[in-house]
Figure 1: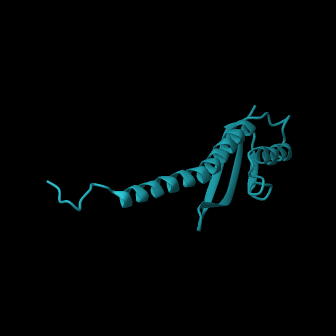
Figure 2 (figure 1 turned 90 degrees about the vertical axis):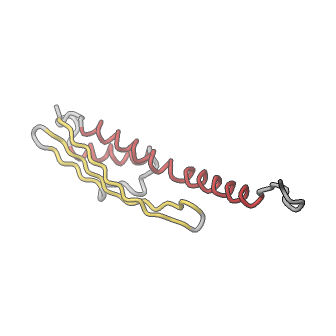
Figure 3 (figure 1 turned 135 degrees about the horizontal axis):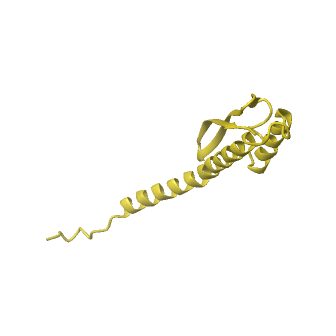
Length: 123
């Protein structure tokens, strides 16, 4: 039993729900590439940490890290000053720490701090 003035329309709820859906899509559009680049670089660091130590000395590994950063579009954040390569007799450790500022939504930016560590035995 509805009154004559009630028609069952929910326009405001639809607009709010649609605005929320657009905001979630927009934030995902801006954040997914940031995390994808970070995970891709992390995988590459593990590969470089496993490289033979006599064929790939630390300076060559650092050059390859900078190249991998360029391939993943993070060369602005990852370079020789943000990464450290340490090779011992049996292990190689690569540590990269960097910050990346991202505009999540219009008017809302956030700085993400990433620390990538690759510790692998070397041949």
